[in-house]
Amino acid sequence: MSDVNNITQNTGNALHDAKAGKNLQQLKEQNTLSILRLIRERGPVTRQQLKIISGLSFTSCAAITKGLIEIGLVREIGQGSSLGGRKPLLLDLNQEFGFVIGMVISSSGITCGVFDLRMNERSIKKINGDFSGEKIITGICECAFDILDTCALSPEYIVGMAIGVAGIVDTERYSIVVSAQLKFREITNILSEVEDLLPFPVYLENNGNLMALAEKKLYYPEYSSLVYIIVDEGIGGGVIHNDEIMRGTLGYVGEFGHMSIERNGPLCFCGNKGCLEILGSVSTLVQNATFGLVSHRDSYIKKYIENDEVTMHSIIKAFHDGDKLATQLFEEEADVLYHAVIKAITANDPQVIILGGEIIQFGENLLKRIREKIENTIFGFELSERVIAFSSLPTHAEICGAGMYAIESFLENSIYKSILSQDRIDASSSNPV
Ligand SMILES: [Zn+2]
Figure 1: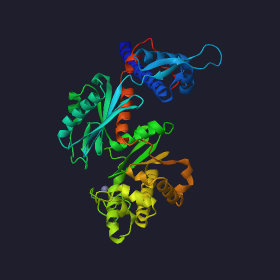
Figure 2: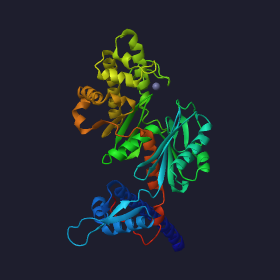
Figure 3: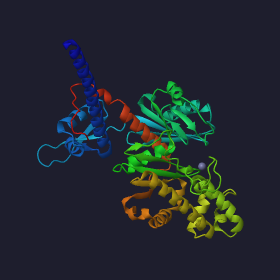
Figure 4: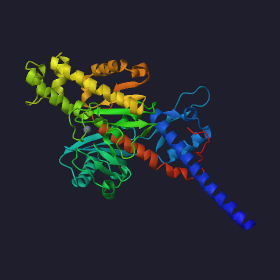
């Protein structure tokens, strides 16, 4: 009987120990990642500053940074100022420890860029062509090797590559489920095929999610929730909640383009009526301007037509000249985007709402008009509590987002974890960061 009790008790202890061990390991990983992020975001910093910002003990900070220096991810770069006594050493990220590739697949080709670990751009390149269907696999690999040649970088320096697509991505199965733009409905296991051909980790993600992540990490690190609405040829976006990309059950979070704001509005290709995309995308704006010219023959838009076609640029130029048709189109656009922002507020209640894409060429007037409309609603009371702004990402926003995603994946999944298995490094302060 006592043996049975002992066995039960021992098994219970073993389970408890395994669980405790796992928790300790998780705590070590979490603390190391937090210190690494602090050094990346705020470096150069001293160990004492890391202690104060992180809330970890000085001993833990010193142990973690020692390990990070040993593997080359962090380095000492000189002495900081002293408040008395010995000058402390400054620590900074070794941003050239490795590089990432950000890649975006569109209907017109593949664009990719190489960045260091602080998102400094090495090169951006676009290869035009049709990469739809099965051609996508060889296209991805050729573009990756091509840009590495351009940068004179060996593949061993690449710590990860992220690919962005305009479509629904199943991140569990690494496949693109639906992409109207790329004209395919499902390519399963796309990444397992690509990973067999490339010597570094590869990730797949929706473009809107990538841009939301990059905007948040680069420009709003102090906020934990952000909605990014992109208005280009179509309308899409991404949602960050509690510092993480929100995907939902099947990856449809952030598909703002197919939220309906007119029950009996025009039919969208998705089968729904009155979608934001069919009413407010840049394609729709250009189409409405082209039709509008029939009844507004003296519109300045005509003056700015390029190659016999109305473009976004023609509309913007005419708008700034005070043109009547362009102003009417601006008002319609502001109304659609006001609805988009209200939907973002009611669905996600984020601290930050960002508008990106070609539409921001309208300038601050567009934001001002959207805010005026919100002020007339119940949501206007808390408008000052929320940031509503244009994207600060550079021209290649999606590439930038893909690069950032690859860096984040590297930091979360990779090399620094090996140092944690060394017993002499105690990174497990009980105070979480
Ligand atoms: Zn739709």
